[in-house]
Amino acid sequence: MNSKKTGFNTICTHIGEIEDKQFKGAISPIYLSTSYAFEGVDTKRYPRYFNTPNQEALCKKIARLEKGEASLIFGSGMAAISTTLLAFLRKGDHIVLQRTLYGGTANLINEEFDKYGIEYSFVDSQDASGFEEKIKENTKVIYIETPSNPLLTITDIRAISELAQQKEIITMIDNTFASPVNQNPIELGIDIVLHSATKYLGGHSDILAGAVVSSEKNIEQIFHLAKNLGGSLSDFTVWMLERSIKTLGLRVKQQNKNAKKMAKWLEKHTDIEAVFYPGLKSHPDYEIAKKQMKGFGGMLSFELKKGLDASKFQKELKLIKSSMSLAGVESTILSPTLTSHALLTEEEREHQGINDGLLRFSVGIEEKEDLIRDIEQALEKIKILELEH
Image 1 (cartoon, rainbow, N blue to C red):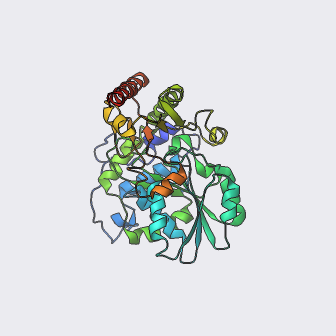
Image 2 (tube, one colour):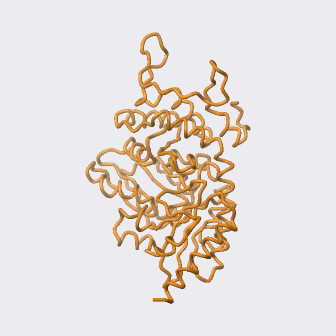
Image 3 (cartoon, rainbow, N blue to C red):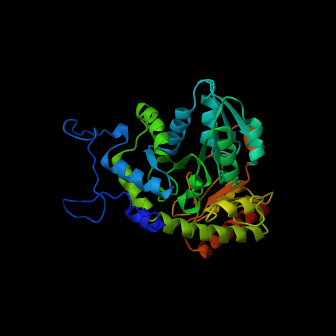
């Protein structure tokens, strides 16, 4: 099973399994113990040290999917992100980040980094030249997210990695929206890949987790801080995540297919002002996305025509759920101004192009025709309401 030619779905299904030697069960057994022997053993196991049997096994699977040497799993995506950033940044260091980031990440930078004496600069464009302009002598990390949340902007991963290698700077990427199905940044030169495993890796809206993948050397550096911060994941959730990843390839490919069809349909709709999806040829970053992605993902955003209330529209949906998270097998929708980017100021949201009429649409595995019918009926209802008023 160590062959590099092993197929994606085979990796999802079999790599990182724990053999049930006692009862010969078809799936990994769960080891829920929080206390292990310390004498006469090769490894002193402890849940906060990220080395229980289930933790170690799942890390092998995630590392293989992202084509990295090693991995760590955390209690949330933000635990993975914050621990990784702080593992490579010290007082007096500087980090360059793209402006269009997940709101929680941006909030971490804006609210916490000044306390630690870490300098930071945001880049307004996705071009490598914009990042280069912000680099200082004390720059230690470049951090990107592509596709971005919620406007699906695309950053040229290869260009960023080449720039960073020239300057001997560590690169990190939030690969949550793409998932390993659609994008493998390590193959494009990125050093560290991060995930909110709550999203596509989990895929069923029932677990909270995070993951980081990199070289063994980098993971060791992250581990030394992680064991002190204590952001490890319970073994029951680890087991659920391993179960979920078995269908990752099947789920995401269907979501890719549905999202592209929905984006094309929405783009032609008279009640839709704009659609943001990297798989549309009208998307400004389409050529870059096509170059670095294997699929365009299951996420898109759109704006209703002026005069149509986005909040009322969401309330009229019957099949598509108004929900805080994303990437489940069920389709969900939300307002970024009220949820994912609520922690940003109104000025910061406006600067990123996030307005009250923007809706982020996580496309599930339902039939496309059912999703279209649901959107159509919701639009008709809010138009009738507008006329009545």
